Every structure is written in C-alpha cells, then in structure tokens.
Image (cartoon, rainbow, N blue to C red; front, top):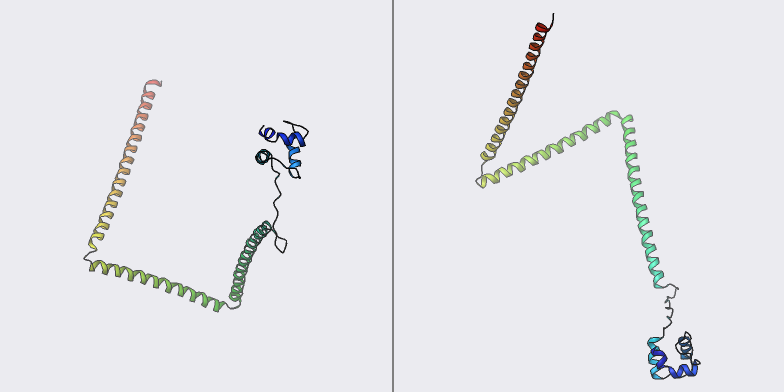
Length: 215
C-alpha cells in the first residue's frame, strides 16, 4: 500500500508502527489535523489515498429564513392553487350561464301564460326574421352564381359542356337502371320455369306411381 510506504516514519512515530492495519488510516487522520508535521511525500499520498469526510452543505437563507428550495416549493404551491382557483371560477361561470338560461326559460313561460297574444306575435316576428335571413342568404348565393357565370362568359367559357355532361350522366344512369330491371325480370322468368318444370315432374311421377302400383 502506497500510504504505508510514503508515511512510514509518521506511522512508526505516531501510530505505534501499525503498518497495514485497520488503525493506520484513522490514526493518520487523527494526527493530520493537529500540530504534527508530515513529510511532503506523505501529505501528497494522503491527499488521494485517505477518504475525505464530506462536509454538509450550508443552506443559504434570506432575511425571511427561506432557502431557494423553500421558494421553489412555494412557487409550486402557488401554481397549483392558481390552477385550482381557475377551475373553480370556470365552474362558477358555467353555473351562472345555466342559471341565466333557466331564468330566461321561466320568464318566457310566464310571459307566454300571461300574454298569449303578445307571445304569439313575438314568435311570428322571430319566424319572419328567420325567413328573411334565409331569403337574404339565398339571394347571396344567386348573386355569387351569377357572378361566376359572368366571369366564365368573360373568359369565353360556356355552360353547354357542363349541361351536356349532366345529360350524359343521367342517360347512363337511366340505362344502368334499365339493364338492372331487365336482369331482374329475366331471373324471375328463369326461376318460374324451373319451379314449373319441377311441378310437372312431380305430377308425372305421381301419375306413374298411381297407375302402375295401385291395385
């Protein structure tokens, strides 16, 4: 062991010649902090061969006695509290909205029972407003379609091609339906003929059996 060789004189004088024993390192550690002088070689080896006791980290606090860890914990608590408070506020808002809707419904029912004619007029007015809005949207769509037609006309395009394509599509569709109906009719005819032949065979067999095998 390098420590025993480098500190041979110190072990011999201070540690009662306890070489290569369990008491060597504790003994040198005890005398190292005292007034005894160690050789440069021994001190150098002791710096890496002997374990150094870890000193407890000093906790730095401010004038309020709070450390950095305390502040981090406080911030985390504040964030959780803020989130919980936000959720509570949202729930209260939803309750307020529901309560307001219920109040409006109750007031409307009361108004309907107390003033049936005025209520009917109000409903009619609302329906008229809805109809006017629908008419306005329809006119907007018509104006947009007219504008598109005008743009196509200015670009030299015609509407004959889309119309011809639509007619061709309907013709093919009708033709497909006709083929489908014809196929169904043919299938029905085949089924009827098949069952008719089976019926004829049955009666022929019955006739032969009665004619030849009955006394």
